[in-house]
Length: 121
Image 1 (cartoon, rainbow, N blue to C red):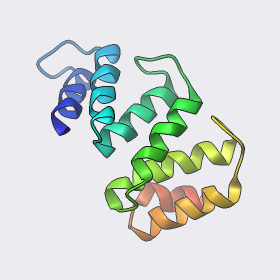
Image 2 (tube, one colour; image 1 turned 180 degrees about the vertical axis):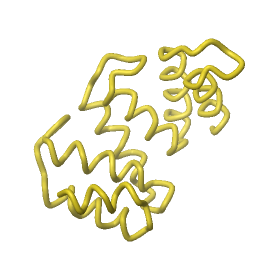
Image 3 (cartoon, rainbow, N blue to C red; image 1 turned 60 degrees about the vertical axis):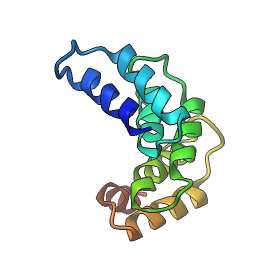
């Protein structure tokens, strides 16, 4: 599972291979489909930013949600990504209560970006 993520990171950073956004997203997708929650988050980020794939907020939200399911500190980036899309109504209906709930949970786990986003919300 994790191997695909690591290969994706090599392409993302251009370490030992030419930097290639499409390869990055492709490897993150393989890892995401194999159940690696960090790959799921990273693929969601690719869809949110349009990096290596066409920008698609609905797919970004889907992968962030999948990544967030486990509910622990490893899932905190997924919770935060999902919350930030929900806050803006990107990829689905705007849902501030759920966004706040997700950020609160991720912040309680110690994830600093969630704490910052919660303070801004």
